[in-house]
Length: 464
Image 1: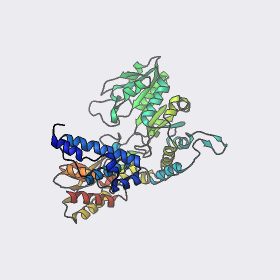
Image 2: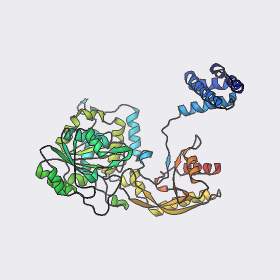
Image 3: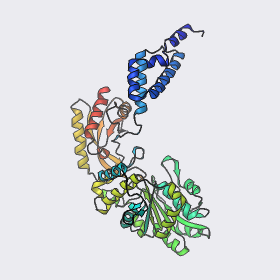
């Protein structure tokens, strides 16, 4: 080696065995297991060797041990963590969408803790079906003849089209060939199912006659798709469900209505524009309706199919249904969530509906309480008016009035980073930046999280 300084620094680097003999590392091995500690030691030494090669001085043994401990801590810490959502986005796709009700969480824990009658008929004493646990509730709540639950709404769409239309045509408006989060595109899903896409109309205007003219002997279904995360304004025209059903009945083809988020309650009840409900789609004559379980329904992730009994039975028999089936924990949480609707308690018990139903006065009181707490620490904070978003591909463009805690700090971005990556015993906090201030929306901060939020804020501001 031609560089004597580099050679000297590399000689200072301890061997794996030497580092393993240190008392602090032996203590780590007793706690985490020798194999994992050996792996961490080798990784740390490899990193340190690379640093030395580019000119760094060799770290001390104490520093190397600390790096080993930090690496072990990161490996052993779950990457999926609870966070405090102060963004004001009620159904936040990146934050797990809908938080679950207490009853849903308890039901899921009970199902996970032991055995259950998932596929066992207690009355008959023989094998049963996992799908009965949600079907009766869904039928009663929606008015549909039958129901089926799969892993998510994208799966439900693929499954329905695979059964109805593999190798045949599905007619859809060009204005509904949507892309939602994660690059999920309706045309791609339709092709994956084996269905042939038949586009009709223009992007902004589609008429009933466009659908009628496109129907041939190869047509398997007419399809409606919810816009999900965008709106069309101005010179527009869309074919309504009733218009499509009238054409379909006359021409002898089924109608599939993909509601996307889907809701069992009228969103006007919480001050939003009316969103078509699942019940309205069923009553309107859709042969099959699909929607999500973890958005406006407010339950665990699921894709729900309701509709005509003969079609649902055919879907249930398809081999893909087994690949997309949900587990006992999901069914338990979904069943508990649906019971809130059956009992007329969804507005109070389902968190997303409770959040959307909060009044501006309630939110202002909470934001002012936060402000008073932080002002005691000489932080420049004030309560300002703002808007909360629904999110999750639901009610695009719809917002609700809210009260925000606004913090004027030198670097809102730096404060945001500190809150996202707090010390080990604190929950990450997500807010948003508006008008060069860091703001927190109480609408999406769950009951009981205020103290954790304020502790995290105080620590982050003190570090600044």
